[in-house]
Amino acid sequence: MITVTDSLLPTPLGGTLINRVRPLHDASELRGLPTLELTDRAYADLELIATGAYSPLTGFLGEADYLAVIHTLRLDNGTPWSVPITLPIPREDARTYRGRVVLTRSGAPVGLLDVTEQYDARKALEAREVYRTEDAAHPGVAALYAAGDVNLAGDVTLFDVPRGAFPHHHRTPAEVRATIEARGWRSSVAFQTRNPIHRAHEYLQKVALELVDGLLLHPLVGTTKGDDVPADVRVRAYEVLLEKYYPHTRTLLSVYPAAMRYAGPREAILHALSRRNYGVTHFIVGRDHAGVGSYYGTYDAQEIFSAYTREELGVQILKFEHTFYCRTCGQLVSPRTCPHDAAHHLVLSGTKVREKLRAGEHLPAEFTRPEVAEVLRDAYLAAGD
Ligand code: ADP
Image (spheres, rainbow, N blue to C red):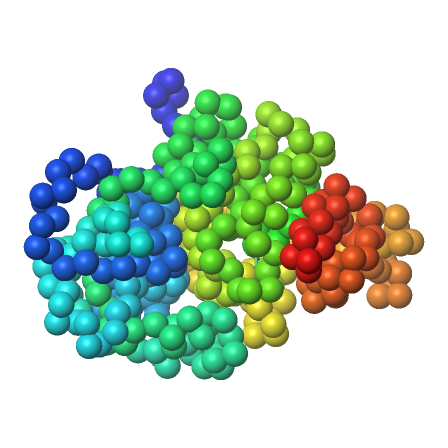
């Protein structure tokens, strides 16, 4: 029997939504402890662990979990997991960090790490298995190589959820879950993106909205590579688009604080599992999800999910083929729905789009809605000043 307290939301991975946020009541508890300044990525990971977005993780991975994730796509206890969440430090600092460590940002304490283990990062192995390449030109591999050689492991505490640059759109997994419940969505789909919403994205989202009650538009706003559109510009574009073209009661714009790793298939799994923790029942994976350059096959990020059963994943993957505008059909289509060849299709690469914007040119309305194109053009023109 369903009672009012029964939730229709999926259980978090591992069964419990992790919460390791607690205020710092007394600064004297930090006295004498070593301090570790976090990078943007590590701070984002700290938040994602502490707020439960990375449930069942309670801290940065120890060696057994690290190797299990790399080799088996699972934590050591068999739970699905795809990308090692680690805290690398330079080898020469390793002796400093034993026991309790104060995590800082710009020197100010933001949390704690209770170090239980230190171990060598297997960078070449991690690059090969997680990123499928050892090429340092890959931005995720470059970040891996640039980081320290020793990983610190242990449980974390976060003193306060950083609401960042987008406080109105910043919600923890518990807050997103509460919103979904309050709106009465019995099913919902999350859309991960690091780009402005072009017409193809909108098409995927709206096809999905035909099937489920609500859309969690969940753009990643952590560190991205230099030529991706900056998060503040994208958020402005999401706001104008949602205002005008989306059903307000069935859409929730909320930011996802993670850094982009560009790990393609492996990152698609991480994106899906963490969105399950945010409480959605479905997750969209289109073409070359979280990919970069030509490191991954167009549908590798869809195929990799066959490593798990549907029960293990706990979130249903909505897979979409490459979507584009067909001039002859006069609508957004995919190879599944359009009989015409490439000459009829409007396809613009990210590079081409950036070239057009830098040149102050308009993007075709079939590719990007004019309101979004204008936000992008203004931002590019301002950046060129
Ligand atoms: P990400 O790099 O995080 O995948 P994108 O913004 O490039 O971010 O893509 C967001 C989602 O939309 C991903 O699931 C991606 O596969 C999908 N996607 C983007 N463009 C298309 C397209 N033209 N056709 C089908 N799927 C697409």
